[in-house]
Each structure stands twice: as C-alpha cells, then as structure tokens.
Amino acid sequence: MFQQFALLVFVVATIAPALGEEIKTFTYKKTRQADLQMAVHMPPAWKETDKRPAIVFFFGGGWTSGKIDQFEPQAKHLAARGMVAARADYRVKSRHGVTPKECVEDAKSAVRWMRQNAARLGIDPDRIVAAGGSAGGHIAACTALSPGLDAEGEDAAISSRPNALVLFNPVLRFDGIPQLMDRIGGDKALGKALSPTLHLKKDSPPALIFFGTADRLAPMGDEFVKRSKELGHRAELFTAEGQPHGFFNRSPWQEKTTQRMDEFLVAIGYLEKQNEQSP
Image 1 (tube, rainbow, N blue to C red):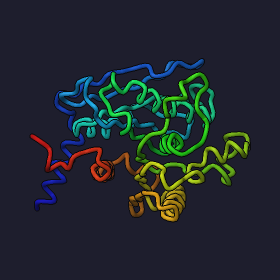
Image 2 (cartoon, rainbow, N blue to C red):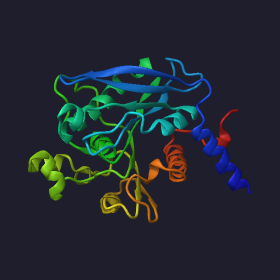
Image 3 (cartoon, rainbow, N blue to C red):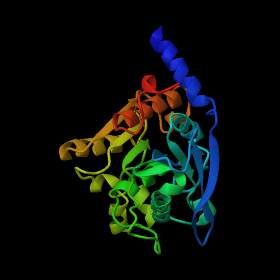
C-alpha cells in the first residue's frame, strides 16, 4: 500500500506543473539556417546566485524532425526537484537541410552555452547532464564521448562535455550500420566519430540508458554497457520488457523512466532523496 501511494505521489509530481516554476527562453546559438532556442525551467525559489545541477534534453526524430516540447514532462519534474532543466532546439534535416554531424555540433554548442552562462543560469558548471531520446539521445551521447565535432568559432576553452548522461533508446553507433552510414554519405571517419560506444573510457561521464527489449536498437545498449563494464566505467541499463522504440513517451513508462532517472541523479549526487527534502 505504501509503495502504491508513493508511486501515486510521484506521478502527480511528474505531471503537475511545478509550483512557482518559471520557463525562460534563450537564444543559445545563431546559425545560417536559424537561431536556436533553449527553454529553461527554473525551479521554485531559483536565483542567479544558486549553483544548482542542470540538465539539457534533446528531442528525437531521426535527425530529421522532432519538437522541443518532447521532454517537457521530464523537465518539469526535475525543475520541481530543484534542478535547472532545459530543452534545446537543434537543426534537423527537414527544416534546415543538415546531417547528423550538424545536429551533434548544435548539441555540443548547447552544453557549452550552459556552462558558459552558469552564473546567469544559477547552475554548477561541473554538474551538467546531457539527455535525449533516439536521435536526441545519440547527440547527447556524442557531447560526452565523440571527439571533435565542435562548431567553428566557439570558445574551445569552455568544455562542451557534460558531466553525466541520461539516454532514452539512443543510437550509439554509426560505424558498421549501412542505413546510418548512408545518412552521412558513407564517410568512414565521420561514422566512427558519430559512434559514442567506440570512444568510451573509464573516466567517461556516468550514464543511464533506457531501452525496450522489442526495440531493434536495443543491442546498441547491450554493447555500450558491456564495453563500459570492461573499462570500469559507470553505465546503468533500464530495460522495459516487450516495449518498442519510444516507449518512454507513454504512460506508465513515462512515469517509470522518470522515476528511474530521478534515482540515478540521486545516486550521483545531483538530487536529494525525495524523503529528505524539505517541505
């Protein structure tokens, strides 16, 4: 009974707007095709002098489409829990005529912008999480693991590498996958750069990965975690039995994956346990 009640409280907190939450919109990057915006959920009682942990979500859509509002429920939940939670737009093929390479460049620009503006956002520049789903999970993983691919003209002295990852059924490898390599014209060097699993190291940022077992991409999660264990790197895999790609967007999996994300962020010291928070 207590567990059912706790889950009900969690679900209500996840769905309901955070009391006192404010969403601010910033232009984090100007490109030839478009100005890119970031919607930032400021927690209740937020102030510029804070040093809160932060997270930035990237929507899915096969590097071709997608909307910035995809991860709004998750962002609202984390803002209610005290994090600064952002949702970043990025260029995609259908609207801007770009390839996955430019998508990754934009994601790295978003992480760099958050770190560069840490004082303005009231965040700790050493506690920034990159998150996303499908193609958005891929570009989030690339911010942490893929070499190069930074946009020209940005301040390279400010790192575009996040401190942790939360990845919802992400693409984790281009190299050796013909249908993905076709998206980048068969460029082998770029394919390797766009394959986060190939660049894992022991000191890579800790990662939480979600997959449904019926997702054809699920073996990528298995490969990533196997490689991680071999290196002594921290990666955790949440699997949803029988669920397909995108399962985390639907109830009850949206609530379950959000709760598991919350637990991971508690475990790495970015959130307090819920029963330890002040009312």
